[in-house]
Length: 188
Image (cartoon, rainbow, N blue to C red; front, top):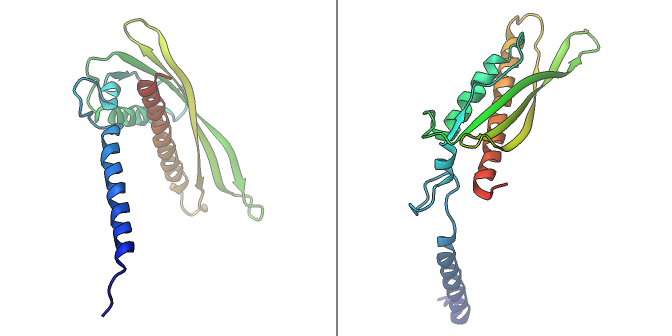
């Protein structure tokens, strides 16, 4: 019959006990970033983001970008406070959106475009409503690419471009949310 090595088993058990004790001591140091803080004395990041009023996104006229502006505003409203309006707005977020077609990849044999790369550009300002002071001013962008199928599929290019723009809008909304979270948590 096999018997375990008693000193090695004790060392493993002691090491495990020390690791669990250290984990227990450090558990009180962490708090959820977007969740509710266990301390009612401090506002959570979610509460601070809920005080941001998102203005209508301004887009250049004569382009297909108003759809993207509406999608970006909706995504940010959902990220900030679950789609509801702001709770007693303290800040106003002003956004300007534009798109650029960066390049088209052409098949050399047929001369038809195979793929396209587009860019969604956004500049934004977070303004403190009480003072009118701009506290955050930044810009972000997202590159997206999509394939263009052959001429037999008439609307596939438009649908692919729309899906790619929706992906870019989600990336830009996440960048804005993360930048504002940085401001509300660290003040930078």
